[in-house]
Length: 111
Length: 116
Image (cartoon, rainbow over all chains, first blue to last red; front, top):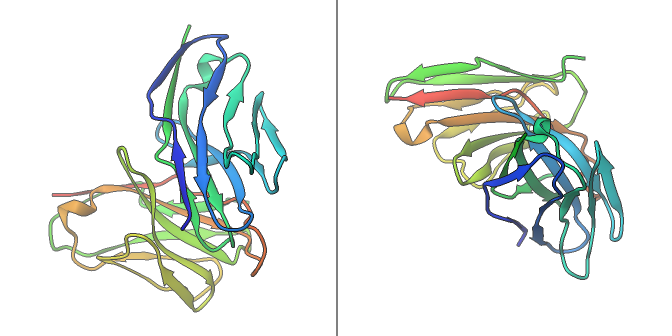
């Protein structure tokens, strides 16, 4: 079956620190992979995506590379800001008719 | 473009009451879905639809009904609310191309439901 496993949170970092949030997946075939971000009281917003192996998705300083050999899609940012405080979800879809989400990782960035 | 809209934003129900959560999108997306979000459990798929007249169950369908009479609307019905249905509910939509990889989903702002 399909599933997504995310690193447990919460994560607390100081401003300008390096961020990694681990995500691994189980899927048949060649899924599309996504990172979503959820700010307090809001719905999820797409942060970045990758649709095939070795693709790198990037947006707002965040990056993630689709690694088929390790079935991973880790989220990274070189220097976090207070405004990056949110919950981050890793997700995949295989056929486009069902999406599978991780449990979410809460990030708090302190000044 | 309003994107995905949901109403109401907040709702309190008593056990046994019924209600409908509304969801609409103006992006002409074929695919629409409902999720519930509970602490520590991420998002769980309740029902989804790949087009008007077509619906299917997700991971946690019990206690919920859906129908899809138009491309734009995908309401979620709770026939007899239970405290276990206290949650935040999100509607989402996306393009759907059968047999191909998925496109990203667009989420509504959510409905926070409390059942007492």
